[in-house]
Length: 258
Length: 258
Image (cartoon, rainbow over all chains, first blue to last red; front, side):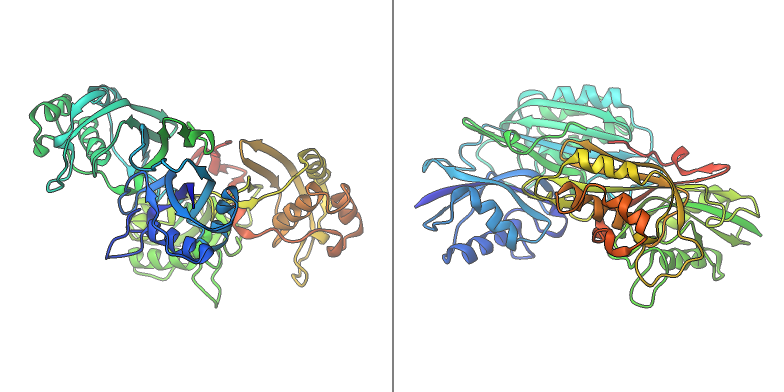
């Protein structure tokens, strides 16, 4: 029995998200079906975490166990031959038997992309949020920095989701502008359901002058969902990088900074 | 009566091309339907030229005549409200009554994008040709330069198409590499059906060592289609810029060089 580790890239537009759901096709399920076709046996694929419907991954990590004799580094090629082109395995190797794609995560990096300008691009319609209007980037940058460090992010989770702990640590939380594109890059120990999208929604309201510029700080202190802003739409969000103590997707899938 | 000029951007993946065809939906037809909805009268839209099925446009130019009282600069917004998101009007203005989107073209710029590497990207599946294998970029650069200037490009047109003249002038014909992407940028007085794709197909054979490195020169001299290479697939091709004596799309839609 071997534990195979994959770096999976997907355009989430056509999927209900990473995790198998009753209401549509999940990336995980599509991959599990291909693994079963190749190995002849049902496989349970474990991802580093879920991504929501319409959210993308430049580099998601997942593992499964198999007795197949396909060489570890050939799994990427073998799977890609059968997968739809909006899911591409970028790398495969054999992990140690105790490696776990979800439990061992040290840090994750997400990016949210906003496209500024009067008219949306025909080519970014599924991978950016188009925003036409004035945004005060200085306010947004200051708001982003208020989320840095260890906080209870209970105000930044979707109501109803139950978790043991809502404390997370952010190592990076910053906006950068590249021409007509605005990137919010956030790296942390972990993220709750919709957390990045609520952070972005709140900062868009701050940048647009629709709420107080200390709204992030206030919501972190109060812990009230209503002190944070709306949930930004999914298509701008991408899982960019997953880091483990001894494995880093950025060594195989470059995080293009522009 | 006013002549309205548009800069149209489209992801050609879902269309049979620019021009209305019996076998599917054309970008031109989608736009004409929206113009008719807004103006209440059928409109004939004239583009700078056709693009093939699956070929994209960062900046296509088109014009139509209308008696509608919609302000010239508002046509872009009005059309985008009804158009599908893979077609976006980036600019509209009133042109002089004698402006003609096709007859007045001075220069066009196309780009063909090749993505190198073991695995294709999930995000470029519709806008680049994935190529896994060795390519000699030096050979390809020399081949591209052989196409510069005025030549009879009869060997680089699809057999069966009839034209008055097959002489064209290329002002730019060069490959550049940006990370894992390879761009072929070509600018000229005009292009025949499939001309850029046959040039690219030939240069891929040259770069892959499948044919003589002077194959472009030889095909230009012989005028024989069989001396040129295969037609590269459409998805890598994009119309980047159209220039007229007094109008240039690059003033409104930036040609991002990377």
